[in-house]
Amino acid sequence: MNDAALPLQRFTVVEVNAPGVPLCLRLATSLAGKIAADLGAEVLKIEPPGGDPVRRAAPLLPGGSSALFQFLNTSKRSLVLDLATDAGRTALAGLLGRAQACLFEEPAAIASSLRSGPATLIEIAAFPLEMDAAARPVSELAIQALGGLMHMIGTPDARPLKLAGHQASYAAGLTAFTGLAAALAAHDAGRAAPAVRVSLAEVMQWVNWKAASGAAATGTSPGREGDRSEFQVLPCRDGFVAVVYTATQWPATRALIGDPALADPKFATRAGRRQHIAALYDALRPWFAARTRAEIQQEAQGKGVPFGPVFTPAELLETEQYVARGFLAEMTLPDGDRLRLPQLPVQWNGRSFAPRPAPALGEAA
Image (cartoon, rainbow, N blue to C red; front, side, top):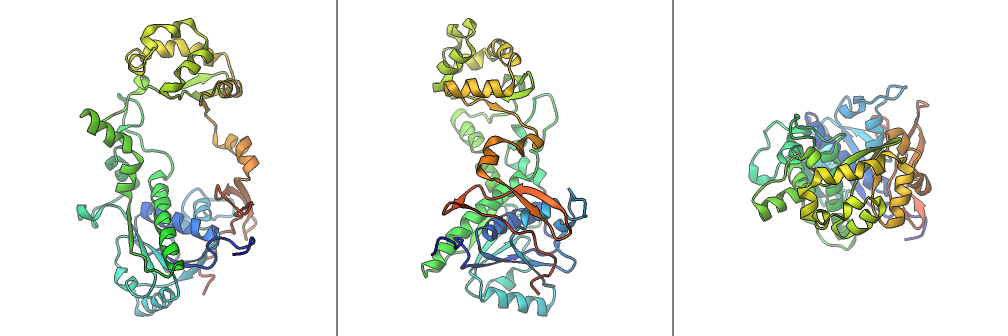
């Protein structure tokens, strides 16, 4: 492969967006296809008549297009097929005959149309096969609750909170891409690749693995601790900072804060710090309140302590690391809208993967 070639540009992937699929599954499939497309694969996005519903999903750009759709479908091509018809299924079979892989979602009413030809099937479902729950109503809210994440976020005396954004879908999409990459590597080596099935519920259990391991070790599932949590977010002069450190970093943290009260033997062990968590944070708060986020970050890095400033979305756009890595790509859409969106956080032969705008509906016809 020459230095100018992208790593997946010799592969073809079909992404099937059938009608009636829950949004959380649709977003996961789209993210897996997006990563492949931005890495150079020819990704054919099969949309139902009228298009992927995400084309109309908020937030909307001034020209009326969906920012979410633009983010999830960069560098792809679009083809409209009515998979409820023989003609649509026949056309899909023809595409799969020259593709190496196919991304699709459950419920798999079209699955019988996919199980022929050389393309490896990468299925994204809501639940594991053992649950026999293909017909169960599904949402990302339910998936997060099932994975235990809503038992972890927020304060004990408040209602459970859903994680912001689409974290379950995106974690599942990344997992599906991992399976897709393995399948493409097998095809490249001339070997048959087994089908891959990813369920959002299992991915969320993996994301929240500490809850399962903690329950196995202690017999108690960890829950929302609020101001009893070991690691908290504290206010500073110009915002908030996340207080995070490992057990081995406690001496450096104590030296950084410089309060003699932290030398009390009750804080010497992790167990002691957790037992006296209120007193610990009473000692920490004044140091944070007297400093800005930048001052805290600079001083903490000097001691090897990983305190993290909390940024607003607007501030993230100008964050030094993001700017230096070229993480945010400027894109002009066909309707004139300008969009700045994350690109893949890796480089290939020293080059970033500059994405192309999402396709117009049916442009590959």
